[in-house]
Length: 345
Image (cartoon, rainbow, N blue to C red; front, side, top):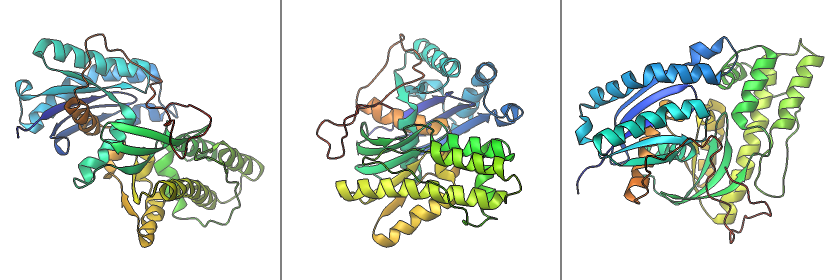
């Protein structure tokens, strides 16, 4: 069988990335130009600044990816790019560049959902992983519990009703004054603390999540008692967040009788969350998560997801546009976990 080489391009937020992936699983290169230092001074990503920096970086990043992979454009089988969800201006930079390459080289263009990319990051780290499995996608913009039925067939089982889990981490970090990006900083400080502070945990009858209550509770505690130990506050916050993630994932696992669980997204790099999910292995669960570089935004995961779309014949044309609020599949009509809402990602 002929090898398939996909050029992936990712520019949905503040990383400009290009990668070459062979057969969906073997990374030949994965170049990431991060803007974290640029946006750090603002306490978060400034969309217009992100877009400008993508424009400046993208040509060099793609060129470097090809060079590191020791491959030419002519050897590429298809070009996969993120078209949503994300920041509209940032997305347009990657899409425009991918469309230009597709037209100039007469190569197929594959439109790739950013969330599908995070899921596919697990295929790179774990070459033996195959659907079906459950995937908990946790990042700064998303919290979704998904049933991965096949490589291109997904079902949303539950999602956040308010803040994404990474958003809650960032807001807590900003308020207690430990800086941006909040997730890694909360994770590090929590290691020095004790889980001694009582915080609220939200419960739903379905598999949806809510993190606004705990975020607000932490912020209010800090405002009322600024002398409170920040490490203890972070440790307690992290513990309750993790319990909610595990509770819903366990419920879905029991209802669907699926013991394979993958984590994905930037927050899946959190050491406490990983540790607690790995403890489920004692109960017979198989736990997967990407290596740290593949947890945050990168083009290797986009190329991997794009590979499976390409095999399915899902190709885009030059009318492809950015969809910043891009959804994915609806909850299945016949799903045993379906509720009355018909929410999209």
